[in-house]
Amino acid sequence: MAGEVVTAYRHRNAPIGVFRWLTTTNHHEIGILYLANSFFFFLLGGTLALLMRTELAYPGPTIVDANTYTELFTMHGTTMIFLVSIPILAGFGNLMVPPLIGAKDMAFPRINALSFWIIPVAGVIMWMGAANIGWTGYTPLSVYDTSSGVDMWIVGLQLLGISSTAGAINFLVTILRHRAPGITFKNLSLFVWSILVTQGLVLLATPVLAGGLFILLLDRHGITAFLSPAVGGDPIMWQHLFWFYSHPAVYIMILPAMGIISEVIPRMSHKPIFGYKAIALSTVAIGFLSFGVWVHHMFTTGISISARLPFMVITLAIAVPSGIKIFNWIATMWGGAIELKAPMLFAIGFVTMFVIGGINGVFQAPIPLDYPLQDTYWVVAHLHYVLFGGTILGVFAGFYFWFPRMSRRMYSERLARWHFAFTLIGMNLVFFTMHFLGLEGMPRRVYDYPPSMWTLNWLETVGAFILGFGQLIFVANVAWTFVKGPVSDPDPWGEIPGQAHEMRVPGVPTYAMPILGVPNGASREGTTEAMGPARGP
Image 1 (tube, rainbow, N blue to C red):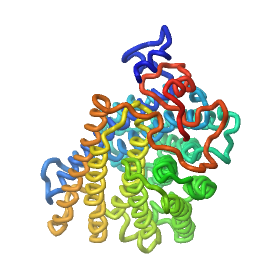
Image 2 (image 1 turned 180 degrees about the vertical axis):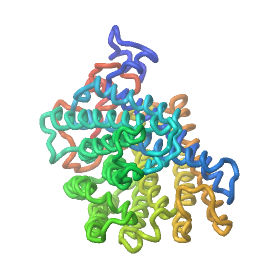
Image 3 (image 1 turned 30 degrees about the vertical axis):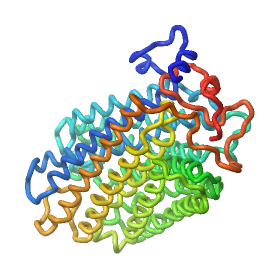
Image 4 (image 1 turned 135 degrees about the vertical axis):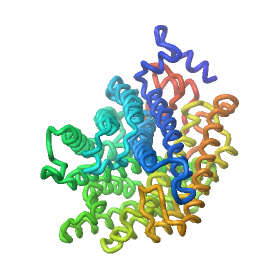
């Protein structure tokens, strides 16, 4: 059936095979390329994490030396943030934003393709360099390190910034100018709302990081001296530039995942979303407040107390709109006919893990508590509960939710449940344990520790391998689906009774179905009709 649909819409002169994927400007296929590329780097970054945890399973040097450990740490953090979490959510945006607003494609299809193809090039450049300065690139270490790997790290990040900025402009123009008649901000999909705010953050924050990276590159080669303390520069300036981008980047990585959850929960609960306006406005509020919290990463750098206090207050305040979302998601589930299929399991996992990530972040936000916890494993636990427990679990919820629409095949629910179980157990074993190490004062970014901390570190290493095994189950599930997966209904999850705010526009498919292999220029409306009408967004 899927093959007949593809054949029916294949243009006579359209490229076929690998060349078609290399030259495509179709938003469906570019979205799939984003997902595939991001998951490839996810496996690479996860492998580095397992190597680090193997080193930390026992005190003292075991499998790597200090310099190699720093390289592993640098590339793990850089890969997971800049090559996985940010682009994988752009992939979901490519797949679902045009059909959710009734557009045939992105506003600038060729720029869309360029935005993707920059990413693997940047990834190769950074991996070839293998910098050893930490993923934050703190100065003066990053200024005085003479290895070419740091220059390659800077160039790779600059390329990723170009990709993100071009993609942000494309998304904003598409959402603001290419909506179908009748699609307004009052009935816009909550996922599209999240993409809209996220791309605004990208457009405002990325140039700041680009400027900082340019200054760092010039300082490294003696052209300027903005960050070098040996000649009167201020190394703290780099932290301001880096965190002014990187804390909004946390919400660049979490807001689209929240948008996915806002689509999954009502569908799998068979209820309209509770508090549509509150969720939409809280998304905007998070985006606005995210630019006022970067200094909480720098409370221990000697900044005056009068400067620190406002950032402490805003750090506490930004938890409020996130709490509104949590309340509304729970209220949506309350009394609903919940189907505990894989998308819902990962959505519930997202909510619970993100709550833990929010609580441990708020706990550290007061200045007196930040002092003993800064640069300990408490921060590592907080970061991973937000970005793995939040972003990655949200990604898996979205993948299972939309995968039947991408492939026309249904995944194995049994394997998906095993994937969820191993992921949640492994994640909590490795990251929750870090709270206790943080309270004991174990510093982050180091490859050795006192023997008294061995037991908890050993448990974390076991948890890391359980977590890694869970991702192999996911790979097996995807492979099985393409080989033996049963043909899926165009809309396998059913209607939401009384859904008032969703798209209901005559002549526009309510939830156009992205299909693997639809050629460039093929009509999304025709594709949907060929498969049968979708039953609601």
